[in-house]
Each structure stands twice: as structure tokens, then as C-alpha cells.
Length: 358
Ligand SMILES: Cc1cc2nc3c(=O)[nH]c(=O)nc-3n(C[C@H](O)[C@H](O)[C@H](O)COP(=O)(O)O)c2cc1C
Image 1: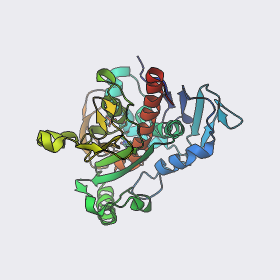
Image 2: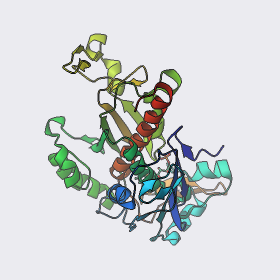
Image 3: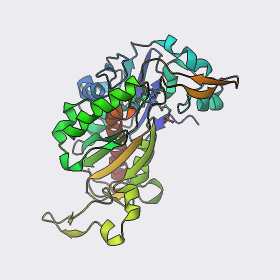
């Protein structure tokens, strides 16, 4: 099994390597008749693209998307939508060290152990360049769930968290960290720049909220909405943890504190007084905002020397040159949003298939 396909009804597959000619996605199962052009996809790719500040990798990619199929006269036809992004700024010679010695924390050894052979240029298929394809597919998914509002932000870098009292959604687009707390963003400038100058890297926590998800999407037990979202987020490169709602903090609450009390709402639907559950109960959306947190580990490709072994099994040390993100969680924000959209588009169509409705 190759596992390059995600989703059940609204499905996508990504293809391509970091230093190949192009990368892309094929979206299958998209409903027909949706207005779709490159202009619906490009703004999301622009948020993820590299080289936009000194706090991300200096690889320069325009990340311009082309729609090759599945759209006629500006509308989706219901056939596979093929999206392509050309790679233009590869520098494969930077990766000669990685060809022979494994970067601890990266996928080099694991890929060799599995396949016996790997494209080491820029990390090949294990490069997060692949996440551009997800963002492109996610932009199509957003069109399937137009009433759902999805947004994500960085809430912590290198152990330094935002102060929730300073949360201002307007700030997210105003600094290079997708940070909703202006004071934290100012601190992170020095923090991330310091790590970069040290040739090191930092981890981060990304939070995401999806509001407007109607009660009922999701499924009980083996495809709980929680587990679908966790799988989607854990499939992102460098993600090592996902919490839904209060997550691990719920384990420290008493039942009455963890419950989300309900009162009759004006619209005939229950009005919840809290959202510890993150908008999901029994694997099914409650109609409350869906909330999750994603932990990104620090970038493995660093200039600080790390003990390793070569392909021949000899002891060695590796210093990873090339252009790398000092904190991958920053550019992870649009990727988390895309995976949220991709799961929710699939859930909408799955719910409709079983229960009917719009
Ligand atoms: C947006 C984004 C950018 C990334 N940039 C880098 C990078 O510049 N250098 C690097 O070593 N890893 C980077 N990563 C992480 C690697 O792709 C990832 O660690 C690798 O594929 C191994 O997979 P794993 O960490 O999930 O085990 C990035 C991840 C994301 C989501």
C-alpha cells in the first residue's frame, strides 16, 4: 500500500518531490458546478510559500498553481481536478551530505529502511514542499464548505506562549508568525532569529478553529470526527501531537468542570455555555466551533552538529546546510487550515450520503 490518497468521498492525492520539476495534487469527488479558478487557490498558497521573511526558509518559490483538468467554463465538472505547481528554485548540491549520512529527526533513515533507495535532494518526497499541494487541494475543499469559517494561528514558539488575554484575530496577518498577540510576536522576532543565527531550530504549537460546522457531521466510533481530524493533522510533516478541545488538560478536570452546560437557545437549538469538547461529542459535531491544537517539532535540518551514522553504518556527525525553516510550525499554519477544510469537505459529503440534506 502506498498511502498517498486522503479522504473517503472528497479525496485527494499529492505527487512530486522537492527537487523534481513540479509537485501537485489530484482532487477527486469534488461536486460539479462549483466556480473554481486559480485565483481561488493562489492566496492560500501565498500564505504558505517560502522566502517571505527571514523567519522561514530562503528558498524562493512563486508557488504558482495551474489547474490542468476538472474545470470547464470556470466551473468544476465533477471529474478529477489536477493541480500543478512548478519547482523553480532547487539547489540539489546543498544536499550531498544528506545523500550519505542520515539527519537524525528527519525521514532519511526511515525512508532507506523502507524503500532501500531515496531521492535525497531537498528531502525528496519527505520534504514539506509536499504541503503546498495540500494547501492547493484545501482551497478547493473550502469551496465545498462555504459556510464554514476556518482560521489558525501560532500560539507558542520554543515554549513561549501567547497570552490569551491579548488575543486579537486582526494581528494574525500583521506579523510573520501568524501570531494573534502583538507582544508575543515582538518577543518571537528575537527568539526565532536567535535560533536561526545559532544554526538551531524551534518547535511551535498551532491552534485552529472551524466555526459554522452544523451539528451532525462526523461519525460514531471507527471514524469519529476527532480521529479523522487527528489523522489529518498527524499526517502533516513534523507534527507530533494533536489535542481536540481541551485535549490533555481535560484529564486534569472534574466531570462537572469538563461538561459543556446547555441551555435552550433562541433558535430552538441548544446553547452551550462552554466548549471543552472542542465541538465534537461521540465523534459527531455538536454545532459548536471545532477547536484543536497541533504540536510541531523543531526542524531537524540544523547547522548544529548531531551524531549520526552513514548509509554504510559508520559513525559520523552531520551538519545540515541548505535552506531550512528555523521553525516549521510557522508555515504549518496554512497547512493545518487546509487539512481542516479537506476533512470537513469530506465529512459534509459523507453526512449527506447517509442522512441526506444539503
Ligand atoms: C511547512 C513546513 C516546512 C518544513 N520545513 C522544513 C525544513 O526546512 N527543513 C527540515 O528539515 N524539515 C522541515 N519540515 C519538516 C520535515 O518535512 C519533516 O520533519 C520530515 O518530513 C520528517 O517527517 P516527520 O517530522 O513528520 O517525522 C517542514 C515541515 C512543514 C510542515
